[in-house]
Image 1 (cartoon, rainbow, N blue to C red):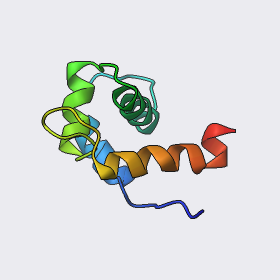
Image 2 (spheres, rainbow, N blue to C red):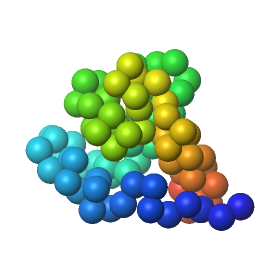
Image 3 (cartoon, one colour):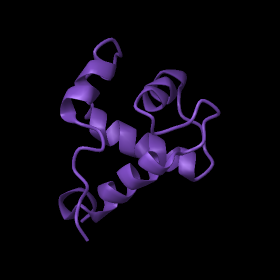
Image 4 (tube, one colour):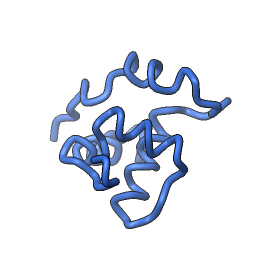
Length: 83
C-alpha cells in the first residue's frame, strides 16, 4: 500500500510545535503516539491534544478523525517506523 505523504507536512508540524516544550523529542512520533493513544481510548496531555486538534487529527470532542486514522495507518505502514 502507498504511504499518503502530505497528510501533515513537516512545515505544519514545525509551526504547531514552535511554542511547545517537547525538547529532544520527535514531534511526528509524538503525534503518532498521541493519535494511537486516543484511538485506543486513552488520554494525552492538554498541549498535545490541542496540537492534534489544530492539525485536524482529532475533533474538538477528542475523537480521532478520518485524517487522524490515515495518519496513524501511515505510521505503521512505513517500515522505517514500525519495523
